[in-house]
Length: 293
Image: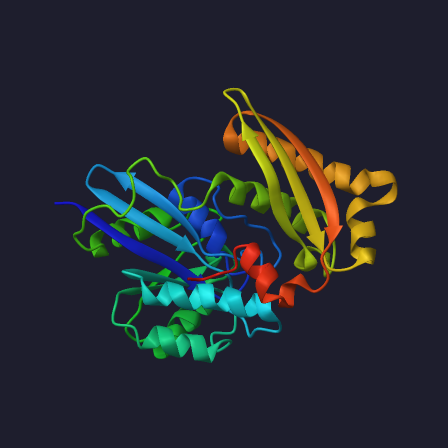
């Protein structure tokens, strides 16, 4: 008997979805920083054993869209409701449970197993946790509630065991040696974007997109050329920094992370270009891969 299925992770921004995904898959597939809206795409991570294939899917945090890119991010999250065999709805101990009632209502109407994960329980006490569990039980009465701490790996093994029990019988959907549905170039742009999220303040990271112009791999090394797109000339100046110092730091930190990720020597060139209002251009967003279909 072989089991296989899609286990999709949804929830509001900053509740720990990407950290949980990386713990479940055992690889650093989703970028996880302390900033909201870190994940912009739906990213699959595939766990294989001889008799099982779990296709995990990390999705952007659910939010009310303010511009075209956020509309497409919401579409990624909603597509995860459509094809899930098991849904992981992630919340945490500080979030207002009624923050996104429209999306919650869609989850409530689902007929598949829903595991409601209350993350960051290390930041709570028994009494508060009991109140949170009771509140969520009233909002999603059919869901199984599991308290976890993704960062500290508390409850993750128990969650994995429960997922395996709930998976349907099915042949594998992907090759058994496949780790993700995304190409290498995607992870290059995500790793560079992660460094930008860590090193720049305010709106800068949210105005940035990264495109890999060339990716040339040999047996021992990879040569990468990447363009960092911003929306305004002033942002270009901030990204580059005085005498190019800021961009050099991003390039250096990205290169180290890429070498760890690919386990090869990496040569990375980064450039900055202005692409005005790319977040509201359907054509540009499509070229950056924001297409839920």
